[in-house]
Amino acid sequence: MIVTKGSEHYLKKNTLGSLIWLRITRFTHQSNLLSNHFLKQFDITAAQFDVLIQISTYQPITQSQLAVKVTVSEGGISRMLTRLEQEGYIQRKQDWKTKWITLTSKGEAKIQEVFEHQLNFQTTIVNECLTKEEQKTLYMLMSKLQKNTENKIES
Amino acid sequence: MIVTKGSEHYLKKNTLGSLIWLRITRFTHQSNLLSNHFLKQFDITAAQFDVLIQISTYQPITQSQLAVKVTVSEGGISRMLTRLEQEGYIQRKQDWKTKWITLTSKGEAKIQEVFEHQLNFQTTIVNECLTKEEQKTLYMLMSKLQKNTENKIES
DNA sequence: CTCCTTCATCTTACTAGTCAAGTGATAGTT
DNA sequence: AACTATCACTTGACTAGTAAGATGAAGGAG
Image (tube, rainbow over all chains, first blue to last red; front, side, top):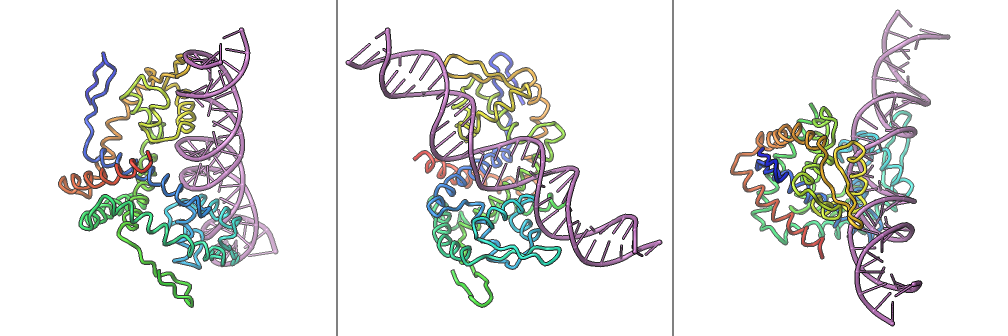
């Protein structure tokens, strides 16, 4: 790192890795804003819809299993499910120790209503700037990266 | 989307775009956890360090300019700077309408202390699973993607 | 010399998440 | 039978963000 004292300006020796990191972080944040803005018309947030989709795929599922699927802490999933339950999208059925989560009909209906629009929204943003080949490459590279951090977290 | 009513199981017709989206989201969340865990020893969070770096690069800078640099709302930057000011990392000097942000010596020192470690941490994670060529490709693709969402947000 | 607009910042009320400590019932041990 | 460990989940105190509305001073218009 080169520090030019007089001008108070840092000429940072950024690595390719850190530049990638920054782009990914900014993209995630910005695309999340867009996604939430888009989903507002359906009266749901991106995080909530993500959880709903996971439940629909794996139901009936326990809270701790669900926490793993959406990569969120157990406390986090507890709060989220409280909100979704209040909205009437899901049901928690207590089987003595564990709570089994299932969608209500309102939850199923919401997925039916939103799924294709959201899928189309996400797909369009990627299709607009990357060719099919580029998308395959990007998916492959991001998978490598994500699996690596996943392994690090487990240890 | 194919729905098998009996088994309550959705066989989702996921697009490549939506799969990429998911990988990126999961990676960002997980790597953020790792980053915060790593930075705990320096008694700072990833978000705070990000803001500190931006200030060091562009200081003196106004709050609204800073908000653009870190892609955060004006309300968000206001809160964040309150925290950083309380910790003694930054200074807000009011010039009647605008507040000019600069680092304190404590803030400069914190950057000096953390910068190389954080850079090394981020670089390592990427280097571990991607070759130099792959990194170049990933950077190029993510830049395209991020610029596309950035344009969408501005309009 | 007030009135009004503009603009940067702050505040309020919210979602979403973390970590760590707390709860409460079941099950196993002595 | 009482003691304790475990397990799934919840809660408390916090960071970090949003959107929308409030604040307050400067500058221009009448």
